[in-house]
Amino acid sequence: GSPTLSPSEALMPPAVTPTLDNYFKEMMGAPSGEAAVGSTAPEGSSSDGCHETEELFMNLCYKTCKTLTNGAFPLRTSAWTCCQASKIQDCFLSNQKRDLGVCSGHDVDGEGSCPHPPGNCGPNEEQFLGNCYEKCSILTQGQKPYRTTAISCCETHLALSCFSTKNVNTGFAVGGENAAAAQPAAAAATQ
Image (cartoon, rainbow, N blue to C red; front, top):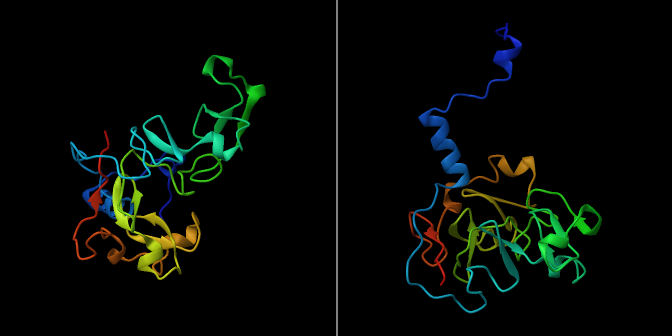
């Protein structure tokens, strides 16, 4: 039979072991190092390091609330809320539009993926957790266009099936400028 666990044991998270740590780094991508200093913003980006269709909020780039709400709620107040006012002091529950979701709703970047740290990738790359990877749409010939981890591409943005073995491939963790690269490139910092 299976071992009997007390209620307190059943609620305990697993201990962080080197194996577990390596698994999460492999699935989510290792934290990126310091971004390149002195690089310039590529065409289509703003001085804050976000794309021109994005706004910087809490150190992440999100699709602008103005775009998401057709101009009706232009001020971002959280990952999931946009306000009808022009300054934060005038925002209340009654004049905010909420759209909750993880990497969906208002919690998206300019292309509809997860919000990302400032920085820019090449034209055939996408950013995931601060690193630039070759686009999943290129790697999978359009079959699995959404990057869900450093080593997985999927048919949808987020679904449990995205973590199945058919969607996970260590070959997906490559930089776009040089597909033979062993490590994805860090997103270039902008000034």
